[in-house]
Length: 445
Ligand code: UGA
Image (tube, rainbow, N blue to C red; front, side, top):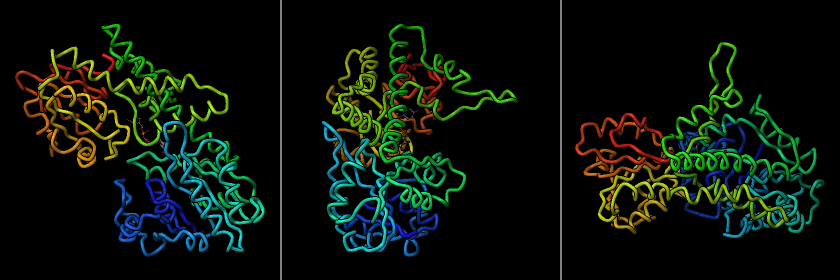
């Protein structure tokens, strides 16, 4: 199938490259000429495992990038909208969605053949039919469901493993305004044989996406609240509590041979210093705002956000209890990205923590395997010593705070062994065995 992907950000690029790898002819569109040029040279504009290899393999063959939306739409059978949908402080900002819908509509005016438009961006329920559809009809002068099809197909890609998630999906959700659109979408994904496919309406597809993210965010805030209570009550470690909770056979089923299945889901039922990234915070806030507009308050999800916004502070509170002052305290900050496997720092818990530590006058040596450049943009180069190696960050540290679950940090006990006096390690991700360090504390302990 010939496909145009509108918006070459993280979702658009991964989707475009992976669909090309699966045999489709793909043209990725972006208004940013520099992005288009780099993409056509085979240079991925984002750090994503496996993306560079697939991009280089398909470039000049089944994949290309362009700034010409009109041509890309006219030369394809199906257009996937993958532009950003930020939260503007009050509600979801659909500005890019509206703009691109107008442009697609304008292009469709010139096209005689049937075309399908698919929204992949995360949009609040109702957007595809109430915002995109009227704009497409108005600017194309054509009728949805007759001369063009319209669908909603959310993405379930985790940053860092987005290529893997796309190539081996757990589900494919297809929302369509009619059977014809749905059949085209089935065709698009026919190459993903054996994957569970959900055929539904655009509005339900939109809701599925938010519900999936809101559930995971809720599990994290729930676990953090329990962790905070464990710490507050004393003599309880949330890690022991959650380990036993995970053994519920409804969470970790026992197979006939007695072995356990440990679903990945359980990692969201662990306490830490909070969730971040470009999805959970923005999506949960957008859903709450959308609910409010519809006269449906969402007190549970409001608390999910509130707990999460307070959670990074817990790390500072622990330090405040252990040291008379943070002024001039020599601190190693380990992990800056919002999660391992990415250099993305958007909404990272490390941001409020580092800012508060700098304001308190702490002397910070920081290490993150990949997010150094991003951190320099955020905090500046002068007030923090960014280290190239984990060992260097630990140099002279009186306290070590661990904020991202990078595997490499498991080396900490070995690196600190024999150090006198031992620094205090504050584990914001509860990833180190507490018995392996002489001075250990963390969230939920
Ligand atoms: C999330 C969802 O997991 C994807 O399914 C979804 O497609 C994506 O949002 C999206 O909407 O585009 P992502 O934001 O990449 O993906 O990251 P996650 O791995 O789910 O982590 C999100 C946040 O939760 C991170 O800050 C992470 O540190 C935190 N987290 C994650 C935990 O605190 N505990 C965990 O066990 C896992």
